Length: 304
Ligand SMILES: *[C@@H]1O[C@H](CO)[C@@H](O)[C@H](O)[C@H]1NC(C)=O
Ligand SMILES: *[C@@H]1O[C@H](CO)[C@@H](O)[C@H](O)[C@H]1NC(C)=O
Image (cartoon, rainbow, N blue to C red; front, side, top):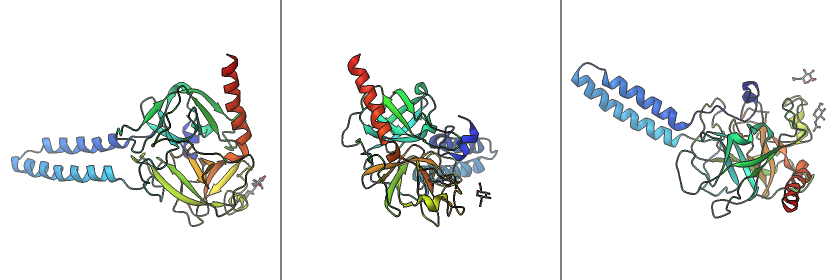
């Protein structure tokens, strides 16, 4: 993945996991304690280190909101979300289950079929909770019209090698009908494990969620905002004053309105800036493509 696209898009391939960050602090502090010369100093320092470590550990665990301006949902209440991870278990994008064999995400999350794992039923990325299901993708189907410069048609389907088991932690989300419109001001929910501050550098541990109103394409495409960069295949959602938004690492995640996934987290200008809402791929523009793609795989199965 080129870094130039990474900076603008809501994807973070080279993320640093939260735990590594914490253990680096720990190492630095304990070395500092070990090499101090006086016994008393050493004693005091190690005592101080101990306190500092406790504070750091607590801060690391309670590291606040993820999505910018969001909150932690009741664990496993957002059952359709998945984390796309590298083979080294680094979260880099979100996605969502549309049936037990298929995940939807953004086309710019395409790092290669043999380089990713899909994790469903997750809540905290750093704790094994026993609810996680990991499945390898079998096929990635990025939209053929995806444009990595304009981000038009930023949508991708992932066919899984094995079905995800739907249970009390994992379920699917409905999709809107082809060309279904969503009214300005409709409140929608976006969720993800992306950065929690516009200048963030860490992927958070637990899932975050946030409610946002739909912004009209006209406002979003105006010269006060994205000035002509918003296409018919995009949706905007956010607050005029900013402060709440999806951010890097939330890419590919779902924007759910009235129980249906109308948007896929795609791009933005920074995160949570006033007058610059988040831009999402408009799923309703691709419903026919989604159905046809999935159907073509099933009919292929039958003839084999
Ligand atoms: C908006 O785009 C037009 C044409 O592409 C350009 O001339 C203008 O300077 C832009 N306005 C702003 C505010 O960026
Ligand atoms: C956004 O503005 C550009 C430039 O004016 C225009 O070409 C484009 O069609 C507009 N997008 C939508 C969805 O109307």
